[in-house]
Length: 496
Ligand SMILES: *Cc1c(COP(=O)(O)O)cnc(C)c1O
Image (cartoon, rainbow, N blue to C red; front, side, top):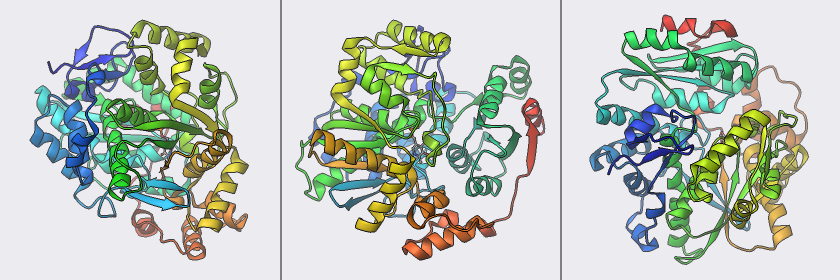
């Protein structure tokens, strides 16, 4: 049976992978999960036939996208990972640095790990439209606080039958991030600044999704709305791949033996990245612990220690903005699996979250979380110190998100004396957050008016090259200049 995707909240809806990818979120507000996850456990040696990143990607996606043909999957994978969008021979790089490994996931077109999934999602969506026989066009709407928007624009640019509109808070993203978006190419892309903060922007987008009049106008033109954020199953599945790939890199280079357990350290925000690792483990990957690293917004650390997920707390803006999140949506998928797929339990927790702003999981569920996850956080001082220490002592340059993970891993080893080999997921180029990195290493720079000067200075002082997508930014022409008040966010769609 190809209808394998069901909601975490228990509605009777049962969809194919293609329909779940187009739809994004279940009708009852839940997230789509694969009903056969428990049957996907393969013997480890089955993966030994895979060598390239694309081999692993095809095998993983083949298990989940059961209504896709093998040649569709092969096409999507090669379009994403074999057409020169990533800078290396393989899309990701595993580096030994001191006692740990860094899995660099930022060598794609926008220099952040979102590229791992957003380079392939558009191709999965195109194939999904074909598989479902839909002849309509898709309009992707996304609100971004920085990284997702650019990665989605780059992924969807010039994809036939799909248009993309990204809304960002006019004064809420970094100068480099804004310039990345405003120089976006592609005839099907539109970037819109919103007067307001990220919450205003996100609320505005949600409103458009819920607005009957807009839906009707679009439907008259044969257009459906969809989204590219990390609750879409089509973004989650491609992230499973690099967990397998990195494990087998360690086996191939004889750092570990086949079957040895390793740990993964994951800088976490919406819980998508680390959940993909959990799925890899369900599929048979030998993982001892997932170390879930947060910044000062340490809601996940508290949850893993106490079983209480409480959003009634102050929100901090940190140097790792992609982890400044209080509602980690993908945690819902973990809870669903850990409570033995009992959707009524999940629905109850999510209802509580909506009405009371918090929920507490029962003792048995908390035990299961703690058996596999360790939660820790690094504040701003610890993050800066990690950047400085790792560069000065090991010559390795980290961005603030990766530094959070690195600092939490240090504390973990100190506390638990766990010597299991560890892979730290490295999620952004340090040059994407050059001001924070520069300040951590050399103290406050003179407020350079020109952020591109800052990139150059960081590169000169550290001897690390600026990644190409960021290097070209200064000279690229600006192609977008629309700014709207938040109440006018829907009107701009009309002329698009
Ligand atoms: C999105 C992002 C994260 C957080 O990943 P989640 O899947 O949301 O947990 C961490 N670091 C960077 C640089 C990101 O862009």
